[in-house]
Image (cartoon, rainbow, N blue to C red):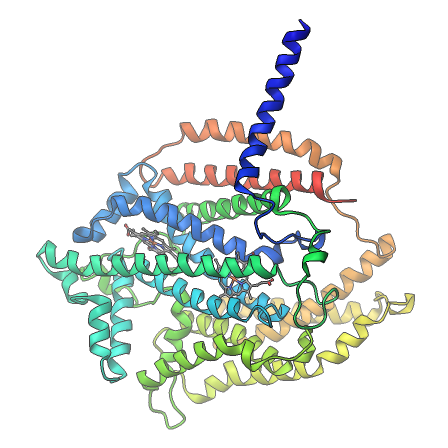
Amino acid sequence: MEEKQERKEEQQQKKTGFFDTILDRIGINEAPLFRTPDYMYNVSYWLGGLVAASFAYTVITGLILLLLYNPANAYQQTQTIINDIPYGAVILFSHLYGAYIMIILVYIHMFRNFFKGAYKKPRELQWVTGVLLLALTLGASFFGYSLVGDVLGINAVDIGSSLLVGTGFPGATTVVGWLFGPGIDAVQSSNPAVRAEFFSRILGWHIIMVALIGLLFAFHLMLAERYGMTPSAKEKPRVPAYYTKEEQEKFNPWWPRNFVYMLSLVLMTWGVILIVPDVLANLNSIVSLPIVINPFPAPQAFTPAANNVQPYPPWFFLFLYKFVDFLLPNGVPILPSMVIAVLIIGLVVLMLIPFFENSNLMYISSRKFWTWVMSLLAYSLVALSIWGYLYPGVPAPTNEQILVLGIPALILAVIIGLSDKFKRRKEKVPTPTQIPKITPTSILGTSVVTLLFAGSFGDFIIRPSLLGLFSLFPLGILVYHFVSKMVKAFSNNNNGGTVTYPITKKMAFVAIPVIFVITIFLFALFLELPSVGVQSTYAGIDLGVIFFLWGYAINLYHYLVYVKD
Ligand code: HEM
Ligand code: HEM
């Protein structure tokens, strides 16, 4: 009996030992992976990881699509993928939204790293490679979008090639030939070999760009491992901001905590990538969705149905599309060469920010000019995209440019210029008299701005106008200011200013098995749901919810096991 027990224990030891041995052989904890302090287990420090998660998702689904795609019959084959291939709609729609979510996350990651000062010495190369990654991500998405063969993708190629040829730069036509092969005329050809020549060229570029993203990302990540993530400015206020080897010794090793945390974020990201397009695909059968967010392809290019479709670029190039509509002060349209020049110079300046801005402190207040430039860039990308969406192809005279870009640029300059004053007030330890109180004026102020905002919003919905849209921004900021003041005042009144974490460890302990049981049911449901046709998107939503819940459960596990009370 005892012998048996001993053998059992020995076997068990061997089992755990085996797993540990593998990790030991890999050298996971000796590898030069950075160690992470407790306060960095916050999603803003892992945004790059989220970008990488969406990249990995698009690569996996992209490789499956590669097996199914047919360049000689791009549009019909895409319809076949959606309607006849098991889970084809789920794979294609989530590939598209994987790319969309990746683009949004890349921008958030970039702006966050700017405002955090993460581009400063010694991370300059991370920033430079980052800007290249941004350009490649947009490029890969552009070529992917054109692979479908619908009127939008083909129009996008048409606009892109006209813009390049229109610059009149020597060699522009040759470059267009390299990029688009026989060009969009080939799409109408009755000869499948000619059609295939065009779509194979686009597919080639799509894959080349993705491969370049992979290579560059490896380098980008290597640098991230070399210096670790940028510490909070409170801990390291001066450049170069990184933890020394000795300091790192006190922190959490990569295995297992970083792995657990990262896994939870990856699964949640994948969940969102699956849920959003599949929900939209179903919504589309109730209300016709705007073309820019619709996961279904638009009508086939060069067919009668395509004639009714407004030529739109993909949403991530709407800003550029509006810029092309700009009129110069003398009323003449902006030249393609100017558009391309502004774009290239803009990208180069963005890339070189770490070399232009090399102040010694990590705080935003020590680099006001560049903070203004980057805030204006973020604002302009959003404003131009909305403008391009609402008024596609409508010429934009100088007075409108001043209204949409000039005035907000001035407002931003004033806010950033005065930001020190707000900051100083914030930095002081709040005494009881400084804790916001609910006063008759604050109630009146909140009511007035909220009503104004609601009124303008309602008005804008009924009668959309540019002025209406841009008046919503300052009103929105005022609403935020007043409402957040009220919320602070309320929370101070109720619990003396202490913030209590809503999910207790006990609840997390119960929630994990509950989630596990729910996902078993969801998986059973998955097997019952239709696998072919647009209805397979139900299964896509189901799978997305399973991924998301598992990610959430692992997040709770991380909270339960690693977060100190
Ligand atoms: C090895 C990696 C990849 C491969 C082999 C691949 C392959 C493909 C293929 C074959 C299509 C055409 C699908 C069809 O219309 O039937 C496609 C579409 C697309 N791809 Fe990729 N892809 C990859 C990675 C990526 C990445 C990383 C992105 C984004 C950065 C991306 C963005 C897109 C987009 C936006 C579409 C259009 C989808 C639609 O409109 O429904 N792809 N891809
Ligand atoms: C395909 C696009 C990209 C991917 C996959 C990616 C991935 C990553 C990853 C995994 C990290 C490690 C820290 C973290 O998880 O946030 C990181 C850090 C960093 N990335 Fe990116 N990135 C991309 C694009 C960019 C862009 C567009 C920029 C800026 C222009 C940028 C600048 C940086 C910087 C400065 C850091 C250091 C952050 C710190 O020290 O806290 N990256 N990136």
